[in-house]
Length: 251
Image (tube, rainbow, N blue to C red; front, side, top):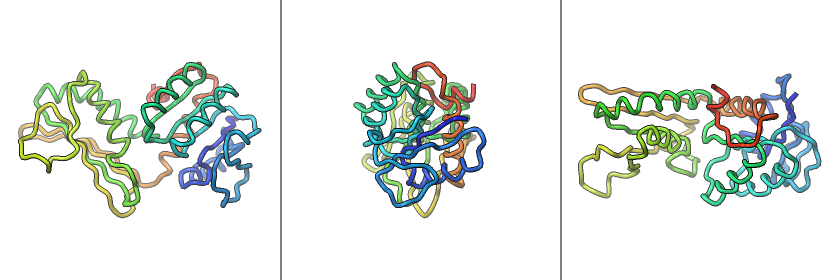
């Protein structure tokens, strides 16, 4: 049985994970961390990690970047791994993650969906072939009207996967309204749509001469991200120190 400390347990994603794990026979939440104490859970909830005194195998984090430093200190001290599902880390925070990963296993992903991570694998194979054939590359992402960041962390992660497969020779274009010029062949356009209650949609467009290839992923509920995080939580305990991704689970 995998024992989980859930950071951000009283947020929307935290409650989705809580509900799913009620029916899971191989994992259980033994404690939650959240500054909000407005929800009654079946497990104890602490306002921060310094107050947590519950033994666990892994931390799953759906809180915010602001909580990262305290969480990593706790994880390193107690020698337990972390599944980081939060986006928006600064360069300094990414450095903290890398340093902590020298002592504990850390799995970090901009998107916990198994579908998105499978698409990432497809892009690694497809992008070099299509780019060499002269295809232009565009990414369009759509999310609900309350999402704060744009473009999404997932869109940027997909762009990075493509660019890395192309020897990082492409640049990212977020806005074409500021200049009157034709499209550069060495750019990846990344555009954000915000509206309604769209959970998440990412479309990668390879546009060539007289043909277009589209790879698209649509999330219809937050449950897909919760299920991915739970899979990661079951995978990580017992692993050696280092940085892991959802791709490691799929290999």
